Length: 141
Length: 61
Image (cartoon, each protein chain N blue to C red):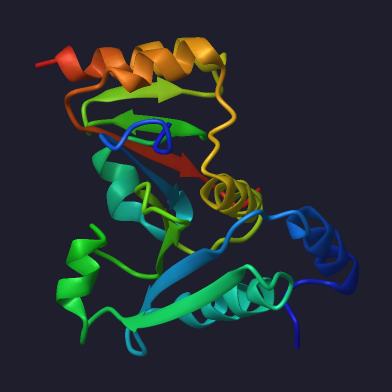
């Protein structure tokens, strides 16, 4: 049974219709001791069916630890949203509810390479010389 | 922000699935953003204010 309702799927398909470039959802999962990994996998699969620009690349977190580490991922389920470049956008947990909308936004940004930020913000960020890690905590509702 | 600078990484965390992170960063409301694990930004802020506060966190000890 689908997680996305037919009407939600239609709306998402419409939102993703104009994606200018391909996006890889690099998905880290494991079969044991991960209650939410299957649900996350299903959501990503349904999402990939709604746009020819989106592919899901599944990796086993336990067997491919070095790759997970390369992506800076230390727990599952986790998704790296990668466009023409890897901008360092990650999602931890099931991308449902509010997080699903954030994932759609991230896909659009990664696809276009355009942050949508205003000029003042871009100028402040352009001069950054030190690492800046943002962890944004959200809930599904 | 992550798109605008190779120095920025952005991780969206589904809080209910990671109680250890919620405890570690004392997340009592969302959205809450932790910058470099030391400065917190609560709620939604105007864009430039958010960017300025986040960048300001780099200088924090």
